[in-house]
Length: 426
Image 1: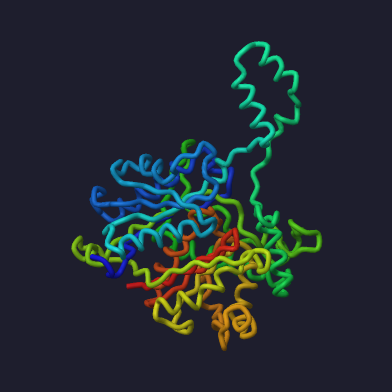
Image 2: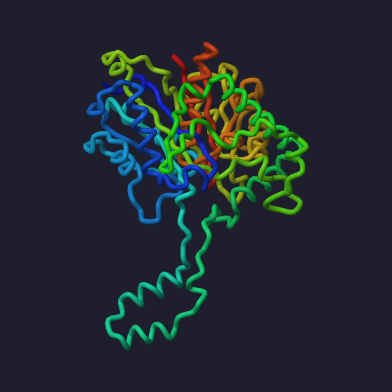
């Protein structure tokens, strides 16, 4: 039935691990398949009832498969489930959840799975366009003479691979460079960033120690016989001194370091979503409801690349029918500590709100006791395509633990994009 509430019944994620370590031999479809399979297994749902799968990925395999479809095959779920892969950079999994929610809300389906995956370990080096053209032309040569003619034109540099990188095609800047410039614009200093990162590591460590993540992080058996049952980048032994000793990565006079940025990560996540009436019919108790979702895009030549979420927050709050002060939890993606702190300054600035949004007052004041209370992407890791669902699960489980209601998920993304979602625990 259209126009009824969309609920999240449950979901899981794999541990998030540093790229090119313990998940190195596990391609995206395998990781995604684990998240899909475990999500369905935990619900007790008949898999034949699932009508759609949407999964996000950013660094898709070079041979171009529909990763969501391959993950479906790998999961052992029925091959009759349509599957779609989407890319909205770091907000891909959140967009997958929004897409499934939209299909349910409009009455197209009753039950779907949204998720995401990233295997940075599987990203292949590429060759230049010149090399690609040369080898394609060589392959089309038909006679020995033609082949010899091409071989005479061969240059050794054609075999030089181009290392995978994360760079904005429009600006020519990496995410880190853009974040460093953002910190300068919003006057966010190095010590403030390091302190934020330390706090996030300690919050993530404490959350693991008290068992919070056991509610939705599933152990993963690797092809070489290891069992990985927790995130591998959380550092309980870090300190301001250790973080302060690290050199800037992107500019010599910059403030972004390996310690106050999210690491390159492998991992996957998934959510089981359905209409509220279908959950009642099946006797399933949901975790929560998707109250509202919105996306923003900014002019990357005029605005800081990662400020997008601040532009859409007021509209999403209005769609959800709530005010900023009613939020019980804030989950803000930690691509970089400086990006989070800059976004907070925008949210709290009356001048910014007036100039950029035409508002008479600031979006709101950020209560730090409600912000990323179990740690964020800096300690947990950031598998680009999977982070959005990680944040949704984290918000809903913490809201239920606190017996609170409303959480806001804010995700900046490459290309000047931003995604914001309001969820409600029930």
